[in-house]
Length: 390
Image 1 (cartoon, rainbow, N blue to C red):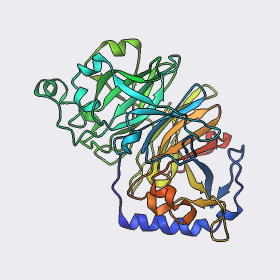
Image 2: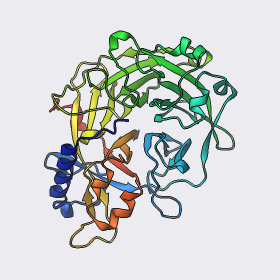
Image 3: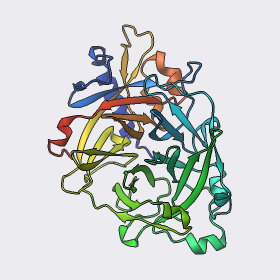
Image 4: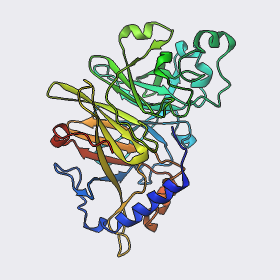
């Protein structure tokens, strides 16, 4: 993930949060609603702290994906999370934002243990994104991102997988399957290859952070940035045959119309697919600038940019701190959809997350890098108005 920050940008974020926080006392606490409120042109999105069964906030999970299984929200953590959160699935109630008890810890199949990627995967892999496989209950896909501090591939494996068209240690797509004892087996692992013409560059910590999977098996990948510092969306088709092979998975460019910005970092950090009136779209989260992108997969329409303001709840509000405080940075890294509601979870971005602290009531939560769960009803107007690619 991209943790680089510019001091001036952080100051601007902090000042903006302080200015807007003065308006938060007039915001209704009810969410989701059919018609979310708008302030200064931005949609207001209110969160719930994700909590353990005992009521404590979740400790530093560095959430990197969100999907749905058995009417629950499922997330996972990347390699920078607290050690207690790594290498497992987290089950979250959408109604209460409470975690389910127990641990769904990862194990490795013999197939993965014998692969070229075993030493990395069984250590502390940087897992990014999570998507449930339709019609295969308990099966998920995730992907590795940053392996820059790993010793690398063996000489034999480097000869086979060292030229991926992107990073030195290739991005690896991993299949997960829930077992009868609620453990989660990493059953298969296959690396990705990209054409040189895609001009991806070698950015191991600015790689793939979003996955979205359609019912036809079409899998979409959201890349933070290429060699031109532009976000990209790629694709491939996943079938049962995919997991009977061991070589590279070839990736194609979707050539969708993504926005082009003159300044700043505008990565993709999460993806979700959405079908409406026979057309397919992708929602993408751009966490650096608190925006959602709505991408037309047919490539006919420009991407619609939806500006968001994220609010955290405040316990025991007072004259200084109302019931909701505006966050300087929401850092969304997980998207999924239940019916027509878009659910979002944040990855507390360690470089900037403490700048959210305004109210002492929430200081301890932010210092624990506790995440929030957000929801936003999908709006009809998003599919009828033009693009705003500022």
